[in-house]
Length: 119
Image (tube, rainbow, N blue to C red; front, side, top):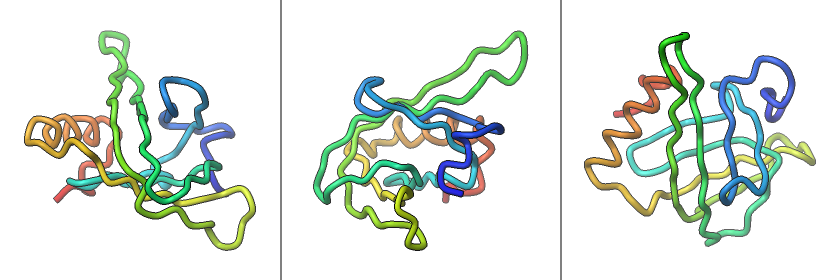
């Protein structure tokens, strides 16, 4: 199921363009790399589109707070998944790939339990 997190069991929200739209994803819907992200959603983007995204990870306990990561990137791929009409896998090349940003992404991936995805 595309965007399985749109139903119960969502692990994180992804906000598009400062909150104009969002979807709720699970670990199967998101991959983080050093230079970009790949996610599945109902959104279809033309190649070359510049996106502003915010991905948030829930708090880990009552003494913790949620963390969010703002990302800006360019769509380098957006393909329909398995012929489904409402599911696309988008690959976003990040515009900021500096060392501090990579460290932030690592911290964020760790919170989302995606740490094994980073090289």
